[in-house]
Image (tube, rainbow, N blue to C red):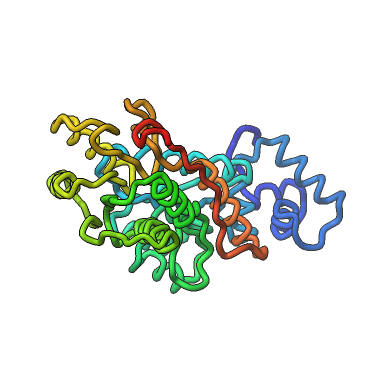
Length: 334
């Protein structure tokens, strides 16, 4: 029987015990003598019992799989962030005997997630993006599946792990204001993403705190393509904005390219900063002022929270991770 896929029934027949006894030995639960448990586990190890994780899962009603729902992204600049988050999740999952199942979903497209959950393929779910109106969250809450969001949400009762975007963006904006930059153009992406709302609140909060009037005409949201970003840049330059502040690295990359095409000097003619730093901005000249978040840590903490939730442990509903504001050459270093 060595080197073959054997079943709980095979082990039970060979040792002359019941299948329930074998299941209890594998799961570590239920009444069973230590000598019997040792005899079962020794036999399993000796005979290369390959499906022991599956058997343990059946004994505990677990799959030992976690679903990671990653949004379908069209821009290559988004991929490094999601890759780092997923690496963090995988590291913690592997350490705890879990595997991950990746599910790609568009905005509020829950077909793939529904199929995975209804087929009982996973013990829990991690959502890598949250929306103001979030069908994924609503579905998981209805099905009572343990899940954690990477990113904040306003849905009650959701376990969420996020960077403190509001505080980070308020701090960066405050620093810019303190150094004399008062006329700032804010360029943001999809307003249906909670992260964009949080970053805007931080930006607006800094103006409120400093008692400086924010120019609403220089706030451009829902910039979904290069033409829209180009329009926002043109308006910022026409208005003689001191600084173009981008809400993410993708927008910032386009802004830098457009300014170069127009022969606009950074920071000589206009200063540029981003609310998110990534690998695509690291080697830019001049170096871009931005906010540093640890994506890998985000994934690790989200996975730890989900495993604790699955285990029925008491955990914090919201975990906010730290950040670092880096002022660089693109804003004159200040």
